Amino acid sequence: MTRKQRVLFLCRDNATLSILAEALLRELDGLHFDAFSAGLEPADKVHAAAMGELRHGFSSLELLNPKSWLEFTSEWAPEMDFVVTLCDESARVDMRAFHGAPKLSHWALTPSAYAAAGTIENAFWQILKRVEGFIAAERRPWPSLKLSAVAECSSEACDLLMSGQ
Image (cartoon, rainbow, N blue to C red):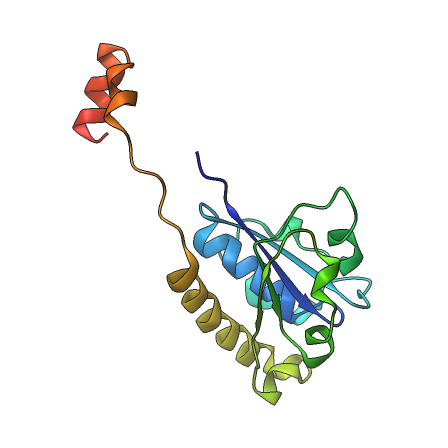
């Protein structure tokens, strides 16, 4: 079985932009991706306007909280497949601090994405488009079922597998 690809979204305070990206990726394709977010100088809590954008229909809001990027560089931290920076400050982080060799992307958002609560909605839509593009470009297909695996299954399980249920 192939593991989910791990994606870390970084911004300065991990209170708005990276939180939105984490929540959107988890919601749109949590079957293929494990989404995380962190900040260089994490805030005390998620920005209320960001939570307001996510409140309708998002099932994992309780997982969203500001974290330091250093949590993802420790010896017990999971190896990331991708690190996506969402602000110029986070784009200057030394990627060698992360385990493995994650692919680095910088999502340059328009200046209105960084403004106060009145334009968090703008940031939400910009990040949503980026996340959808990311999923389309980076999703790996699951391994196909091999006939040898079917040969070893019970007759009832094989019937289910072969019928596509």
